[in-house]
Length: 383
Image (cartoon, rainbow, N blue to C red):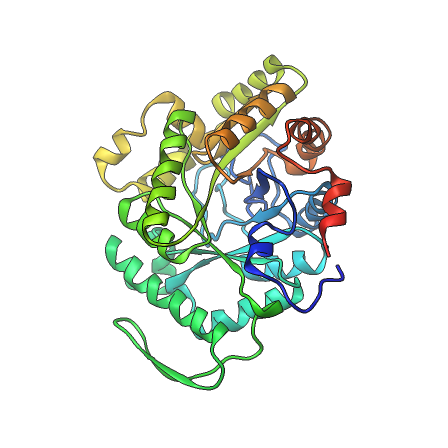
């Protein structure tokens, strides 16, 4: 890449380009991606396919790749997310096989010690010359936590723990010499870490926050906050809330959301395929298990019984659907940008089969709308 030995946080947050709407590929490390479907062409999640995908995405100017941290599948006929590449080793391998794209690692804070994590992440950042990002999650999946023997924490206590966890990591990245840390969850003496992250700054930190506690935590510690998009109006309000709360905290936090994409030459073709893989071939048993884990409260589950909500879970794990022709998809992305979002992570039933059409048809439309730089411009912006 030819970067200098210094990198600013502004450069990291811009992902080294001028794209007004950042676009990433979501969950390619997982079998079936984000589509709980039985169709034979569903995503493998294999390493060879991920390697092909990162090279395609990097050459196309896609901004980032974001994995899901998953340790156990959701059962059903396909065992949705039953085979998942571990995100930190995955990120290192992708960074070593790409030039421009940013790659995130998704880490459950209670499952990895912060001293070990700080060195892992600094090493990845050096490998990628400043292109590594940390997606930190507090964790909610009781099935997985039992596998690790990790004690369950209350909703609010998870964030107390995670706050100390990331504070220790940042101190290890920033401080020289030895120091001690004594908190509610960690008592650590003689802390020391070298080398530091690449270029004199640190990896960008992402966190998803839906509840008031989660959003407050994300605003305090993150550079990028992921929030759900249900409608454009709701999304615009969510962005306004984040902007106001981050300003009140004396911070500026970028706001991202997630989607899944079904793009075909005509809207009818896209809708027909969506109907096929969701309504005719959806793995509804896996969906029911996922929702029972994620929303153990029966009242919460009842709120997700609406048909369209269930179809979104099957179609893209609850993300916002981008379904239609290239014009339709580009227009939806324009509206998402107009609502104030800085970026979006999207998925496909089969990334390698479908991304090239998105690259060739949707990205040029976004360039004409002024939301994206051309591939040539992005390449020239990278130092």
